[in-house]
Length: 223
Image 1: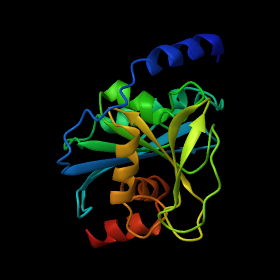
Image 2: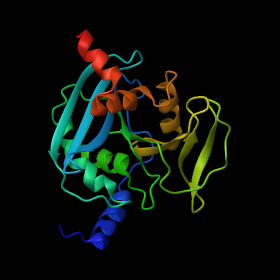
Image 3: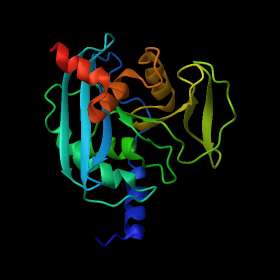
Image 4: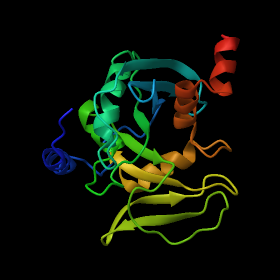
């Protein structure tokens, strides 16, 4: 597989200029989606999960899993090219489109301001929020491991997101606007979707579906 990183870099820089970092979505949210991506068969298969929940009670409306042949290698900084094809495949199965989509990964908290949440938001023309478990770039001041603690994530004199302690004594989350969402609203909506766990409900459910965790197994058993 021949990869032209310079061409991909230019594509990222071009797309990043199209990202909207203001609130371009209806604030009376009724449905929130979550996405997560994993890999099977030693990385040869990409598995994407999308769930749609009601808001504010977080009942599962529908969920979909797509498995496709992995089309792009693992290259840090270019993961969206590896992940979005399977996410698009899963998205095409969704009947109740959400008002807001939480994406497991970075939004603009990315060296070229185009993480998977921003890339996917542009492709779908959807308001998206990046909810990442690890930092990709930027600096922040240390914060107490107390739920609700938050500090800006900065890169080159620019705020690219937030660092949020979502649960006591847990590693923080890295929240950033994806597309059609402001940085303040990204933080606000993640906080609104926390229910005592480290992850907000949309990505907690998507993670459980993608990895077949007990939350999802129990849900299927109860159906």
